[in-house]
Amino acid sequence: MEISLTAPPIRTSLLHWLKQSRIRLSEFWRTKHNRRSLVIQETAALGERRFVAVLQFERQRFLIGGSANAVTLLAHLPEEGAGDQPGR
Image (cartoon, rainbow, N blue to C red; front, side):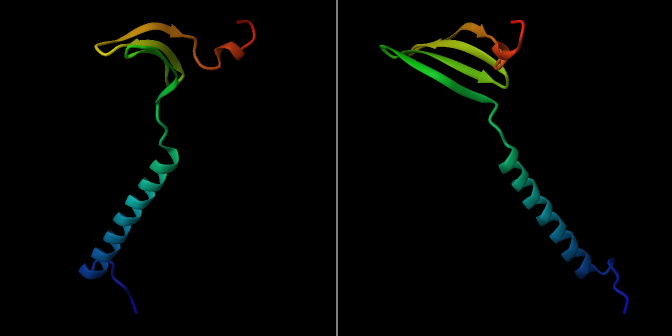
């Protein structure tokens, strides 16, 4: 008995199965490998709705200050792990 993949019911079922498998695999990959690239490392409240915080984006780190009306970049900090390298 020979099975033809060109027959509409079998081809439709196979294509549907492949599509569902691809969706499930991509969702699985995203949940395992999805890293947030923007992280708040530290915060300190200064009172009167003011704060300072260290933000990290990938390997870059920033010191920011904020109030009720504004957020300001205070300093660009050394990259994460830069202090661990010899000669620095």
